[in-house]
Length: 174
View 1 (cartoon, helix red, strand yellow):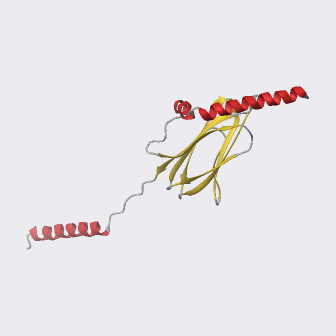
View 2 (cartoon, rainbow, N blue to C red):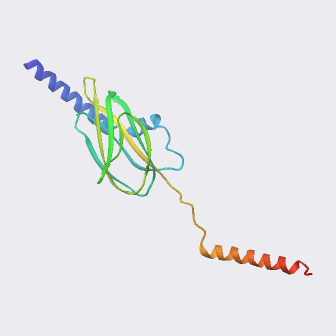
View 3 (cartoon, rainbow, N blue to C red):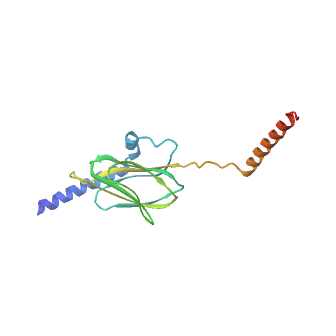
């Protein structure tokens, strides 16, 4: 019994040390070498890296400022251990919007801006039961075709009308 509690204390101390190192070290420098680039023309709207050491989901909320193509990237930084399962679910007030069941990228059309909620879960199979992740969301705004204003239509019809009158005037009658 005493060896089991010593082992737990040792694992807890080691886990606390690893967590302190993970939080103190800049994960962005590690992530920059792993991350693929953002889609061309997109804007980074959310970025979070962290440390998971238990199976309870991490919850976060974020605002998406406009509609467009949303790309979610979930990356296992494989430190101190690789995740055996890592998943992310994005919800709104009306239900699940997107779900990633493994590290990778997923793009979809987001019809309207708003406040969303994220749930991230992960488990490792190593002795420390801990790992780090990176979650990024980028948004590519849809460009709508700009309609021609009424004044331009009126100007164009006037120019066409003048051209037709000139053509009739230059054609000899008779």
